[in-house]
Length: 199
Image 1 (tube, helix red, strand yellow):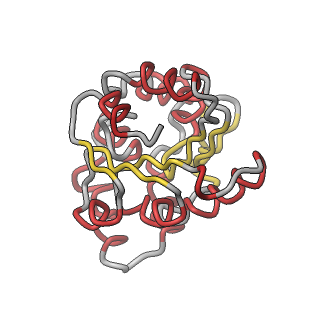
Image 2 (spheres, helix red, strand yellow):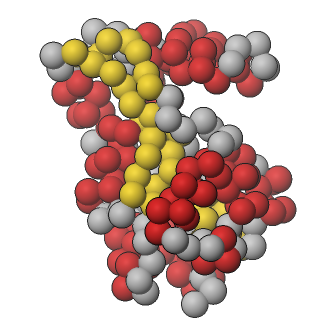
């Protein structure tokens, strides 16, 4: 939905803490030198004592693709439940849920006290374990895998694509994701997915 692949990175760059700081943690994680939990913890520590208000202001400036409202309205009009599973932050997913009338949203929570970030994070969604949440949502709404349409853009969506009845890779960052997606769409307008849907 957003043009930024990582909200964590977007925030770090906006406050001047990416290059030489958080970027280093990402490299360590990608090289399997630290765990995902440690990666998130180190990232969140950088923001300790930042105000929640400042973070929200940054998050509100995240650019969205054109056509998000058109796509979500189209899906809702066809009786489809909209769920957002993100390894990003709930400060954004909650905003998306409210703005576009999603039925369900889950992401990782930044912890705070009296309006100030504590430097801690509650990890709800691992970057490569979104399928676990998809199965919980399927149970919640009593739907089968064949009824699930997954839309994603990174290898973190691989397991999600594997359990979905139909999958769309939108502006994917990974050729491997392309190979398992039913459809690949490259566009500046996310509503271009609509003609590719199986209904």
